[in-house]
Length: 295
Image (cartoon, rainbow, N blue to C red):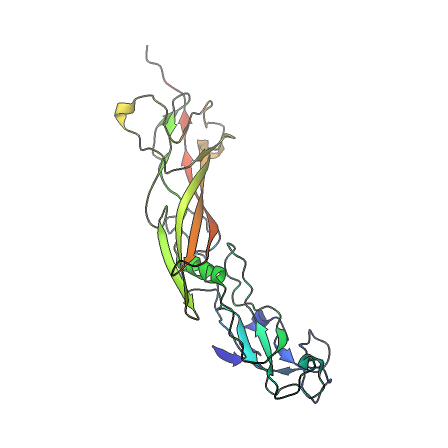
C-alpha cells in the first residue's frame, strides 16, 4: 500500500523515520531522527494488525501468534528520493547528480518466533546506487507470515478429564487428541517478490504440570488407556499422584499441558531453510481421591 507516512499506521513508522531533508533545509539530506527541518516522502507500507487466536473451547489461553489475516508487513521497501538531494550533499558520496541516484530503504520490524509487530517499520537507510536496487526479500520474514496464517491451539487434553475417576497410588495415563490445529502437521505459505516460503508446524513435545509440584515431559501425544491395561503405567506419558487433591482450591489439581510447536520452513525450489517455534497451553481440573478398600 503506497501512502504518505503521516497518519497511515499511526506510530508504525516511528515518527520521522522516513523523512528526508530537502534543499531548502540543511544541506545534508540524511534522514532525521527529530532534529532539523524535514519533509515527508512517500514510502510503501504493508500495514496490518497482529492478533492471537484462542482455542474456542476455553482450555487454551492465547500465547504467541494465532491465525487470521497475515499481520506481518512485507519485505523491505526501497524508494527513490524525490526530490533528489542538492549538489554537494554528503549522501552523494562524491558522485554527481545524474550519476545514479539516492534511495531510501526501510524494513519492517519483526522478531522470528515472536509474531508480528503490527506494521511497525524500522529506521530508514539512505544510500547512493548506480542502478535502481531491488527490494530485499527475507525468507525468515516470509516464514513468520506463514506461521501467522496458521491456527495453532493448545493441547486438546483427552486424559486426564474433569469427569474422570483418579486415585492416589494408581497410574494416571495422560494423552491428547491429535488434530491439525492442536497437534499438527499444519502447513501454510507466504510469498513476496517471486519468493515463496512454506512452513509446517508440528508439536514436538508437551510438558505436563500436574498440580502437585511434578512436571512430566512427553515427546508424543501419549497413549490412550484401555481397560485391558489394568493398573499398568503408561508406556509413553503418565503420572502417579501420592496425595489427594482435597487440600486444593475446589478440591482439584490444576493440570497444565504446554505444547511446543516446531515450525520448519523452506524456500520453494529447495532453497534456504530454517526453524521457528510457538508455545500453546491448555488446562484441566482433576480430582484425586483416596483408594477405597472394601473389606
